[in-house]
Length: 251
Image (cartoon, rainbow, N blue to C red; front, side):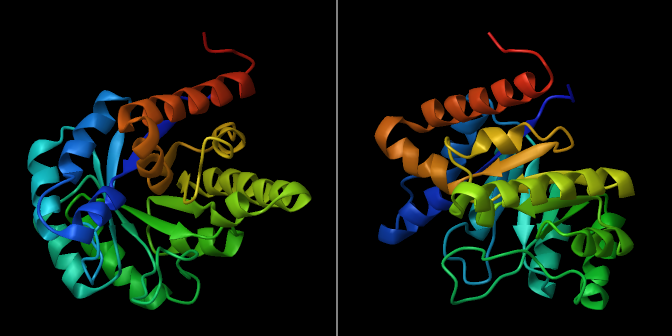
């Protein structure tokens, strides 16, 4: 069995609820603290250009108040680069971003955008920030990410989560093959987007994945049973799947 599979909890949509009405409640930084208590290994936050959920102040507080690694999701823009360089989070994950989308739709096209993206990778790495690329699970995107100096790829699991039957298995196989390829070429491999209690275990069982990033589903489940309960259940599903894949079973 591989090492511990890390769980990064994305708190963006706690801020979405707050911003729907204004004010300070619910507080995404408080959610980050609860996530850590419930077993999260790190916190993910996406500071979008339009500031639709996470705010600059949220990032300031997360850096100051949370004692777990912050994965700063960002578009490849000069504004976001300046913010990342000022705060120096543990990691920066470059993601595609369009104003009209409800959430991040698909992976970044690193293969076509290499010249543009390489500048951001160099600048981030020069200050000690680990750089991740949020991509589709294809060898071409992984190879391009490696070529521009990324440390990590995060595989987009949205198509897998939305598929059913044989198509879901095909998507899972594609993610597993990409995770193997990432390890082969020297990239740390993460995965995320759309994962739920029902879809997480097969992904968590892929031995070459090192981290899953999950957010919207956990915030939704928190409405019914509490955030800590949702995260603890997700943590247990991940741990059991990884243990069973390695021929062990968690108690």
